[in-house]
Image (cartoon, rainbow, N blue to C red; front, side):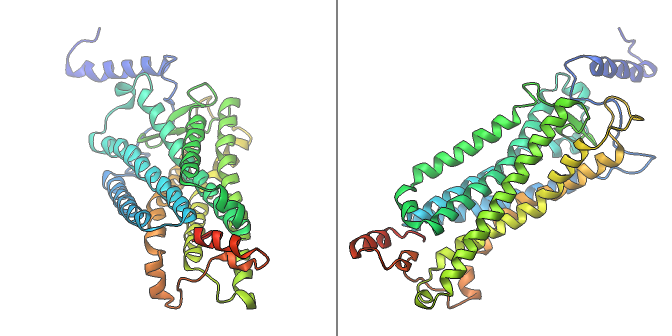
Length: 370
């Protein structure tokens, strides 16, 4: 037992922390490079920085969600309703992600609690790391899902109109959430691990050089990179198809403003995801694939790597802040002010004159792309 006096209090605390770190349950704590300052310098994070980011992101997503709810009540098109469901899933994901992770980070900066004492069994750290992976992969996977939905809606409008429904859109969103949650469970099941990251304010997957952590790092980065690349390919084909349709002499007057609106929003979401996420995903892949430094300890990560990881994470945070503004700013009401001639016109179904009149009336009434 420790003697309760001023001289022994610090020693007791140090002994308790060392015992915690040496226990098998404390796998989320690393021994080296976990201090909040180096060489007397101030830490590169602060409570006001995290608080401002969280408030801006939460307010933006809440506003976007209200706008989406209002738009969904007015639309009658099944295709547009499905697209709004995907956007709603993206906004909800970004909002809850900022709420969960921001609450923990801001709480740490305000209270400066000691993770090794408060979270001896790593429950909070594992939850934080799981949240980071889950809320990180969901926007990328949802972006790819929206790109696929628009791809089939533009290139195969008739089969798309027959198959798409609100129920199916909801199912796809839930499936994306389930897949991302399953991926985030990998470290809990033993494939990789979540550890406390510099400067002791957040937890994330570990960039250590052991086989399991390397495997999980590659899985996380490759799934994210694949989602971004798939979105780019499908959106490129969709945009090219729309441009070809619009420049056709017979169909130049047959455009539809909602087609432009959805594609502009989708391309904006893709660009933001690419700029914000690709640097982190590529950095993780490069780090786990590089040759280990024999001069470092078993659970040691170079300080430069830890700083770069924190910088790339800050860039990723902008994705959750900018996503809602893509929908807020690139709505038809805003686009018409910029481009007044953008008015509602017949559906893209009219580009297929070989259809019988009754079939064309049926699909036009359903607004294949709205």
